[in-house]
Length: 219
Image (tube, rainbow, N blue to C red; front, side, top):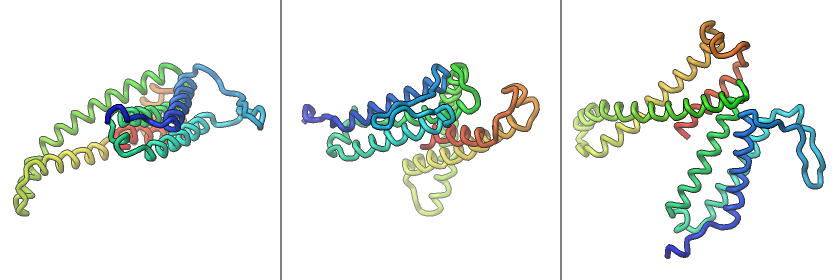
């Protein structure tokens, strides 16, 4: 049975296109090159000097990933359940959402240092969120056990799962509040915006970065 497991050529092709577009987006957000013109077969050269490049790359990457999702969904059930296939799909998904975050952050500053700061921040926040979720589960489990016993429900394993879910919700709320506060402070609190940039970015840019940062954990 194992030797019959194989991803289709259509899925591989869409996955590869997604990876290429994400690579372009990551390289552009790190200021490795400029995109001024694009050549399309049957159309000719298109001037992109006045285009909003992050939005264009994001749209193309999302479109390619949507095709990839559709191709993956059309794989046989045994292939979709194949661990290597699921790992491949999750890898593409994480690459796309990471690229979207980097492209959003490029609205603040396009540089390798910005990309490095974002990558380090993602890792640190991921570790912190996992730790807080663990602590929240430990704290909430006895409380939920006490509450559910009053309702005649005595399954301890279910209470642990429920506590973990509530812990994730609480962390999400705290994360949104923390990121919103940092964004607000970086725009209107003098010690913050003088520390981060010479001229504060637009509130829309801060909002986009905040939303993309939240989606890194709960998408």
